[in-house]
Image 1: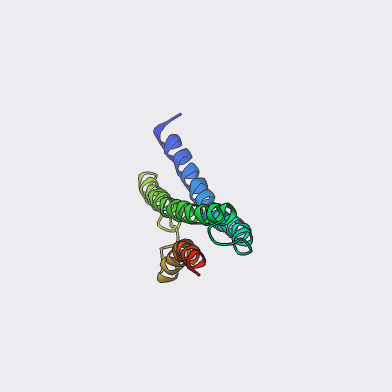
Image 2: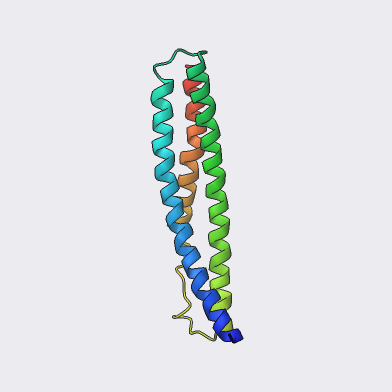
Length: 132
């Protein structure tokens, strides 16, 4: 395999990885909402201080933080693959149109921040549920 063929394959793989992690971000959000909802339905009817309440509270906070940190990592990976695609496009002498990926807009940044707000806002929700 020549260097150009290897670079082209790396380019294809980088695009596939970009698609995968973009899709994973929203799949995780869906899973998080289901898990968090189930934990909340366990915690709300339980009396504060019972084992059921404490376990649901601890799991809810832990899962919210874990999913939030995973979101941050996915964003780093997406940035990495976007840069790799641009670099490989230049190495392959592709036109700007052929190697172009959508630029991050203010709306994207807002979506990313809103997703983080869901996770870290859930931590706050669990704390409020524990205190009320």
